[in-house]
Length: 254
Image 1 (spheres, rainbow, N blue to C red):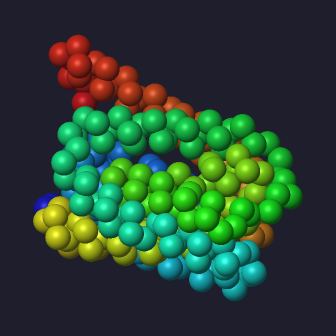
Image 2 (spheres, one colour; image 1 turned 45 degrees about the horizontal axis):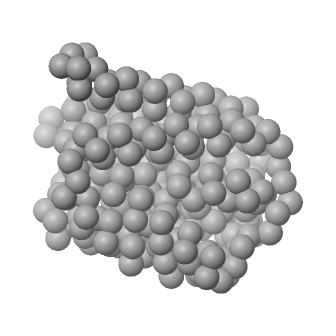
């Protein structure tokens, strides 16, 4: 792969990492960027994204934990369901048609954008516990591994819908990202859909951006950032769906 492309991917990944560290769901932009900007195959893009989330999740969780923003009991229950289903999702991703994966990613992007836009104020809910969290983790792990969205894009809208406070939501999303990514990466390696250079370029950019984003999440209001992210997600999701619709009609635009 051309080094200029790898550098471009790393630079854009810094931006994605910042949004991921600050809001937890910025990572949903990574796979579309790899597919449409860098021209990476959808399965290689998903595998590279999941590998990058190993570092993003670890860094983000460490920063949020140091500031007391992670409910660890809830994390354990989520991981109980998420880890095995993330591995299953990474294996299953090979059998799904590329177009179906792209559509699933677009719908997740639109849902995440709508949910971010919908919640205007912070709330004071309490995270669910026990089997309910494990069940949520199953769905989050499988969908994340299949689409390469890393966990938060599925988990964060659910927690916001349950009226969990924003920082608690982001902290939980950061904490489950690493184990989901680890399980999915093992499956992707076994599938043969993992590229070391691509994964390394993504990881470097994400790591730098996550440190910046997670730090800023605790010292500034994230409301304006959430609004910007929500609008960006809605636009990107709409563009991907429009592209797929045009492709079905036999029209190629990019």
